[in-house]
Image (cartoon, rainbow, N blue to C red):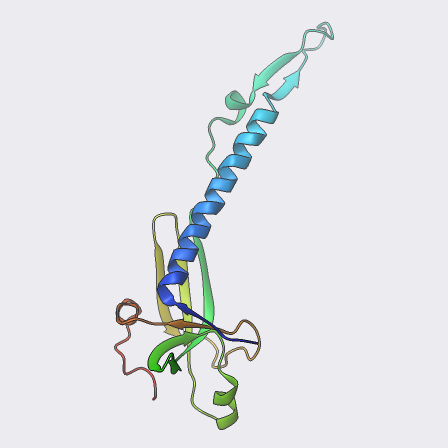
Length: 162
């Protein structure tokens, strides 16, 4: 499987766009549902004629409820390292350890990337891994870390072995 290389900033942008798109979709589905049903409750009192139905509107019964995705939090196992990309040695965050690291027994800096996404911002923290091994299969993604990304994650550049 070919390794996909992304800038770390692309991840934050994609996550923010995903939350905004999800909230837009939920809002449009809620509006469609509200338009489909004018009355939430239709009833008739005992002894009344069958044609004398009474209705309670959806707004009167439920009020104005706003549904949306407020926050999405998850964590991803990853490792820190350096890779040569386009002839330059760059700091990277990888979702799985490269096969050649496993073959030569190289020490892997396992971490856990904790991601919290809300409509207003995306926050990420890099923590020590809860388990010492990375998945050996799965998506082969590499995120290139810029100097700003390293500072935001609390890393100073001497975190990886050359």
